[in-house]
Structure formats: structure tokens, C-alpha cells
Length: 163
Image (cartoon, rainbow, N blue to C red; front, side, top):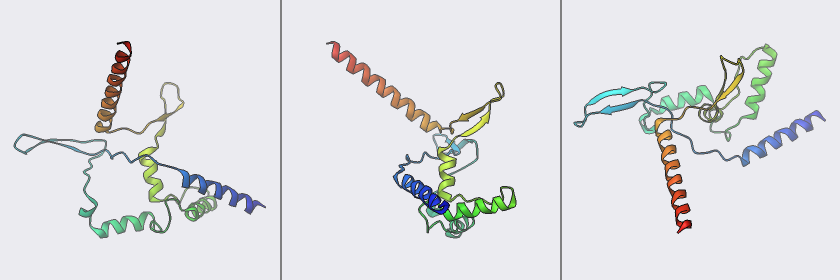
């Protein structure tokens, strides 16, 4: 009977996962390069990390394969969630009595790092507070422009109704 319950829970989780639609991935924070009018580098503005994004084709294939092999050996075999890996890691951690093995896939790590915020302790209230992930300058500007366009559009709609 407990096995049937586990199978039902796994079935429901799998169904929910298949129905899930994720938003498009925001670009990661990266270093900004400032150039003069002649193309000379004036300065660099680092984000939270000194990161420069390169096209996947410029990354050596051996490096790509090494990362996938080290992080998620079954990356090409599952659809983003590895139930066997999660159960294996949970069992290993339970037997060890400590967190010694992770069961998340590369896909799960990307979702966590890109979309999920963090819980931090507020020093004034000593309560756990959810912090939304930081946005890039480009995302903030795009959001502001979108709100500005939206408010101009609604003002035009209201003024056209009056006339």
C-alpha cells in the first residue's frame, strides 16, 4: 500500500511538471565594458561577479562535456528532473545523517539560480524574509520603459473618452 501511495505522488508530481510553463530565462549578470568613441576600452563595470558571456561555440567541447559529466551524468537522458537521482541522494543523506550528496539536475540548478530568490534574516526583526533575485540594469530599464509606455497609452485612452 505505501508503494501505491508513493507511485501516486510521483505520478501527480510528474503530471504537474509536464504542465509547467517557465518564463524565458533572463540574462545572467555580467561585466559591462565602456568604450570611447575610437573603440578603446575606458573601463569595466563588474556586476556581482566578473562574468563575460561567450557564445557556446567558443567554449571548447571538452569543457562543455566535462561540466555536464561532473554535474549531471544523465543530462541527455532525462527531461530536467531525475527522480532516481533525487531518491538516491535522499537515501545517501539519510544513511549518512547529513547532507552529503545532491540530487538536483543541471536544469533544476538553473531554475533555482535564475528564478528562485533566497530567504534572508532581517537584522531588525530577526525574521526570515524572501528576497527576489536581482535584475540586470537592462531588465530594470525595459521594465521602466514598459510601464512608461503603458501609462502613456492609458492616459491617451482616458483623454480620447472625454472628447
